[in-house]
Amino acid sequence: MYVKWKLNKTYIFIYDGSKNNSTVETNFTSAKISVSDLLKGDASLKMERQQAVLGNYTCEVTELSREGKTVIELKYRMDSIPDQGSDCSYHTTPTPAGDEKEKGGCKLASWFSPNEKILIVIFPILAILLFWGKFGILTLKYKSTRTNKRIILLLVAGLVLTVIVVVGAILLIPGENPVKSASGLGLIVISIGTLILLQYNVFMTAFGMTSFTIAILITQVLGYVLALVGLCLCIMACEPVHGPLLISGLGIIALAELLGLVYMKFVGHLKSLVYVAQELFPKPLPSSAIYEQLPTRGLYNLLGISEGK
Image (cartoon, rainbow, N blue to C red; front, side, top):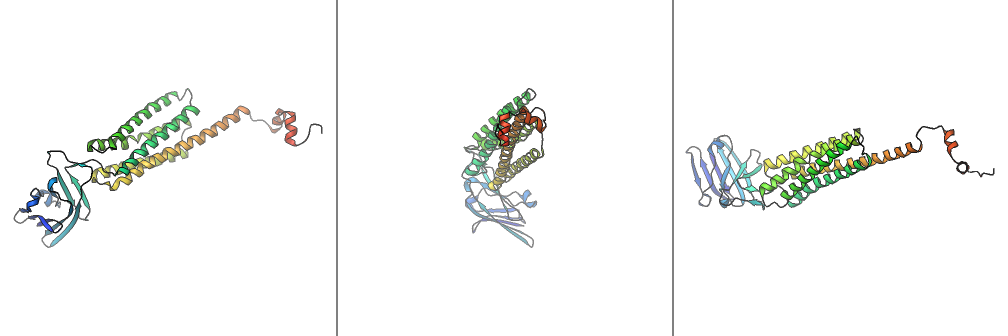
């Protein structure tokens, strides 16, 4: 078996399996592969960051009469932060399909571009603001002695969630420390699922479950699942390509909160109309009784005749 790595057109590493011997180019003395991993089909190349030159790396593997080749582009992220004094290495892994994966001992500050970071923060904050809007409607139009305890619990849970998301946003946006950025992202995505339980309790406290509220909750659950899947894929791949999946999940959660707010406002308006109607007519009255309760002048005006006729 032969494994050859070259940068552009220059071979920087050659491994001869028959002799178990490696040949390294002088400018890439730290380049190495793991023989145990090579026997498992992993021809990954490791080297120190200082010697990892940007460019296209080609891996050529020859085993008996079979040959394979994979080209990988090595790029530095603008927010990559190596630990000073540490042995920071880049690890480029070719796959059979020719896909690229870049993992390294260097810490990466973020998986997302600045615009994606802004969306990741805006959607959860918008969803929380919409929740507080529903909480206000619940307090003003549906408050009763029976629901006071639930309202207090919703208030406490909402405040805790707001604090967690704000802290996560503060940790995520600067992007100067990779550990803080990852912690902030985790706080935002994981804690935002609490909105599902809060919205369920708001609906149950206000008017119970209907087919429309069930559809809203299902939509919100799907959005949360998408956000979690996007987060997991970003963490495993260390690539920003799965950012849109995460952002779309957070956007769906915010949309479900908006639908819940509109529905509560609409149902609350209908309940107000029903209450006014019940106050005016406590009991159903026959049409003759209704006309008897009207003032005579009002009845004449209703019929379009004058009192003298």
